[in-house]
Every structure is written in structure tokens, then in C-alpha cells.
Image 1 (cartoon, one colour):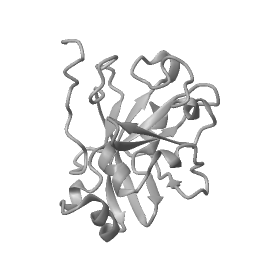
Image 2 (cartoon, rainbow, N blue to C red):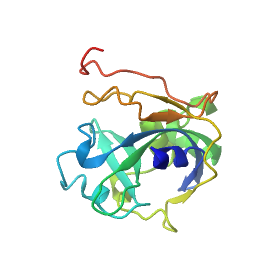
Image 3 (cartoon, rainbow, N blue to C red):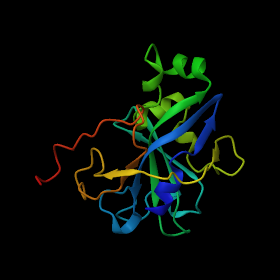
Image 4 (cartoon, rainbow, N blue to C red):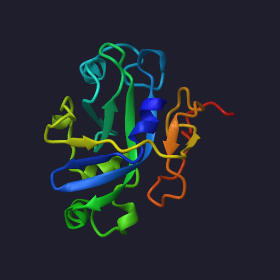
Length: 182
């Protein structure tokens, strides 16, 4: 969770757009049934088992690119989904990619964030230390809210979603209809 918290407020830059991260979601690798790495390495999740500070991008529902930062040591497969952010540079470019949406919605939600940054599965495996996708961490925030993860059916109640309080760019909580009742 410390790794997820440390990504709040970080800046991610790619293809002319910079996003300040306002919401993240942690995934624990092999011990986490909601993680893509929960069953061990696959061609899709192999990047998660590599070194930290690497981008893991996957295609959700066959159409949306979602980005994770690998945070665990090599072999551990822990990663943090970048759920939402505020576009702080490259508004016109982000708007071309996202269409006529309000600024607050340009990177609200993991698919919107991926689209605003023009990330694709081809970016998966990219080092975030000086590659075409740059990650600049800031000081961890003084406060962060936590809650259950969004849209997962397994381990849905783990409070591994973190966000900056009061941020209008944070996505809405939606429990998966496939998750067991509380």
C-alpha cells in the first residue's frame, strides 16, 4: 500500500500530455485473486513479474488501455493501477484524444487516463526511468482516502483503492455486480 500511496500526486508524461495522478488501486500479485498475476506469469502478465518502475498496459474489454506501475521487486508481481488523474499539460492534445469532455473528465477513470496519454499495449514493459513514458514522483500526500477496489469480482472489499480527498478528477466507485454481496 505504501507504493500505491507514493504514486498519488506523481506526474506521468507521454506523447505530449502530462497527468497528475489523483487515484490509484493496488494489486498484490500472486497472493491477490483480483490481480492479472494472481495465477502466475502469463504472456499478458509477465511484465508484472519483472523489475519495478516498469509500465504494464493491458487491454480491458478488448477496447480500453489501462496502465499500471510495477512496484514489487522482481518476481513479486505487485502493481498499481493508475485509476484517474488531472491533465496538467497538453490539454488540447488530450481533448483531441478524448473528445469534447470537460477538463475534469479528461483522465477520470483508468481507460480515460490511458486514452489521454495515448498509451497502448506496445508501451507495456517500458521503463518509467527515462523512457518515452516518464514518471516523476512527488512527496506522498499528507492525506489520502481508501476504499474498496472498483469493478473486481474477487477480493472486492480489500481497501486498496486510494485517492486524494476533494479531487474532482477521482472516478466514481462502482462495485462489480459479480462480486459477492457484503
